Image (cartoon, rainbow, N blue to C red):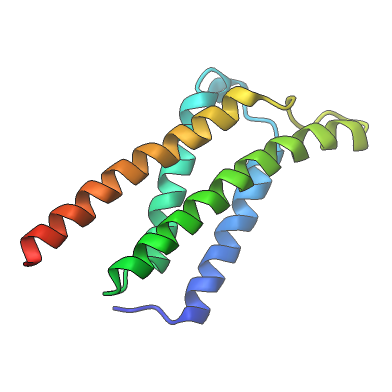
Length: 131
């Protein structure tokens, strides 16, 4: 089953909205010790989802370029969210989130790198097996 471009955009917008809210509110205390792992997993699965939706055509070069664009988009999204968390602490009188954390950005990028490694192995293996 193939999704239309409009359906893909709708899915991405809904997931983006949920993600932004999720990153802007403070985690319940039970999750706070797993913050870095959650950052890693979120960006790993966000990259998986976006690549599944957008980088799965028969055009190998186009898929690679889309994969790179998705990775950069998610990397910048991670930086933007950390900055937004810090700004929200200055704009809102009640603290709704923690501070800017460079380690969160590191784990975001680590999740993207791990996904990219798996994606590349899969794509190369698929290319070799399809020959």
